[in-house]
Length: 283
Image (cartoon, rainbow, N blue to C red; front, side, top):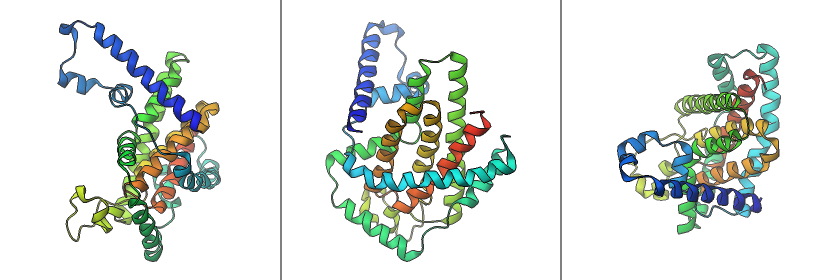
């Protein structure tokens, strides 16, 4: 997987270099203003402007990756029940309600406390490089990195097909956000940095605060939905997608945004959503 990580980062750097060369050839009067450029930036453009730093090692991300991988079979078995009852017809509202019921209740207080202790121990190992990596992953791991992967694939397929796949990925990411937000508001599990403000003092959490809520993880839900969808489109790149998913998940532990239970619940939900989007889109 290390080779895949290096290959991916070099690809981003190459895109950045090509973009810079083209930008330099534009006449000044043709350059966009700061406000117009900000409005028109695509996911690809944003990552070109802010390419990834050195990310976490395989040894660091593997444990949470294994926990995430275990959700795949659960999601497939659960989704088979939905498909048997509903077929391939799109019904986002009904599916969202059903998917929410499949996610386990939050861990008991003692179990969540044990997970919090793991995050507290990890926080003591933070480095400047690790914080930089986690910050980049937190910013780009919601949507942009997955859109960039799809953009890469779209270069090799007919335009109409690429446009359809772009819309389908967008729908999956939107549904992932919607359902994870609904569950977080329902279950009201405070994020680790709320339970222990010393984990993220820059957040300025007020005494007695309850939110932000972190179960299930929105990052994990979106990442899993995207990886499930993208893997079906391009199976030979599955390992690369899973590596990036693991990077995103680990970053959320590293900066105390979530405990591991938040991430596995989000992954299960995202896997379900990915299965759903593939099915209703005809894959």
